[in-house]
Amino acid sequence: MGRPKRNLLATAEETSSPPALLEQGQTIACVLKAEGNNLYSVDLPDRTRLLVELPARFRSAIWIKRGGYVLVDTTTFEDRANKLDGEIVNVIRDEKLWRKQEYWPSEFVKKTGYPDDSEEDLSTAGRMPPDSNSESEE
Image (cartoon, rainbow, N blue to C red; front, side, top):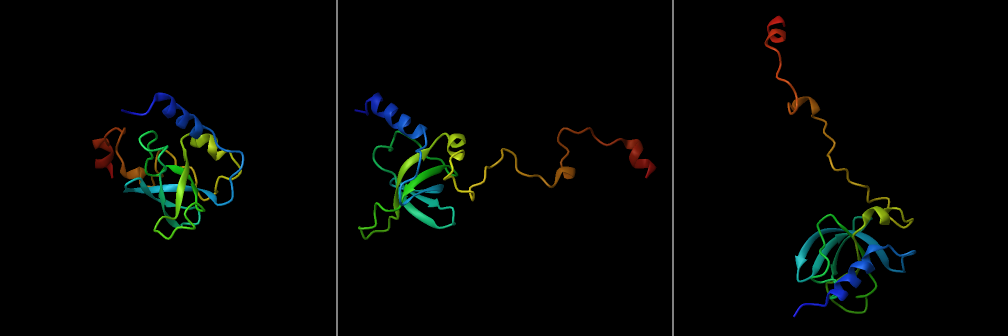
């Protein structure tokens, strides 16, 4: 049988608001890809790549997308000798609210919805076809 809905709602509520301050060993990271078995490759602001684990309370409750942000605790697996570098403490869902916090890394710039097109002149989308008269005059 599945989890009770109150557990899912509690998990969603817990991740909706950012903490006032980050604890020692916690940092914000960008998710690069899912490695499988609730393991994710993340990129820290200094471009260090880590392998982190998603705790059981988030599994099948909150989904993590590539390019999304998570709060990672790197001190949880220091005493164990394994390949894991940390644990996901919080999944950042309301990125707009989190970006207003003073601890948000300046290395994670906001991505715009449209890529910067330097090839504007080559695109003919939304334009009228060229006049045949202007071509014959040249």
